[in-house]
Image (tube, rainbow, N blue to C red; front, side, top):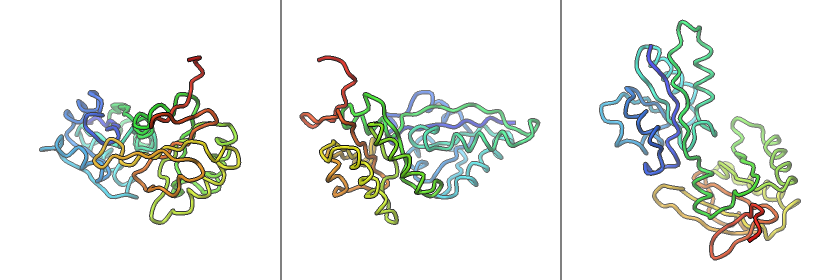
Length: 246
């Protein structure tokens, strides 16, 4: 049996990949991942077997990776950001544990990575210095009514709220509904940061308000951070005070 390891490659730039993740990729015989993420690490993949699939083929991709490891090849499954945050860590682990113990490849563990929310927060300043919630607006795997319920609970609790998958060509209205929910509990002047392509080419940020942020460019490569009642903006930085007296 080979070994299978799940790796978070960071938000995009190789400079943001951990040394542990880099070492695991270098030592692997097989690398599996979503095609877009495979392209981010192409320079590391010479002479390696690659299992690359398109969006919506996650189960097939991870099953092929587990099969490769079971066949004796050391295999890694890569996710952008952190593989345990909307990544492939859970799916790979489930597939491994479904197998009889005698047919399981060795599980090499999960290598943490810098998540998109961490990268975006660093670009904006310090918006996550207090309690925060992370919510994906993709309703492919989660019912939209449940997503709205979670968003309302986070808004009511005055959490800083980070939104993954905020908008796509098909999902243009969802973020408007979230904005309306947030406005029921937060001031229209609440700072909102938008980061596009964090740690990648064309990286860009803008700081807006809860009232106006949906007028800005937002897509599937964006991450949106909505402040809490104490978040403020100064000299282009978005800051949520931790509570220290300064």
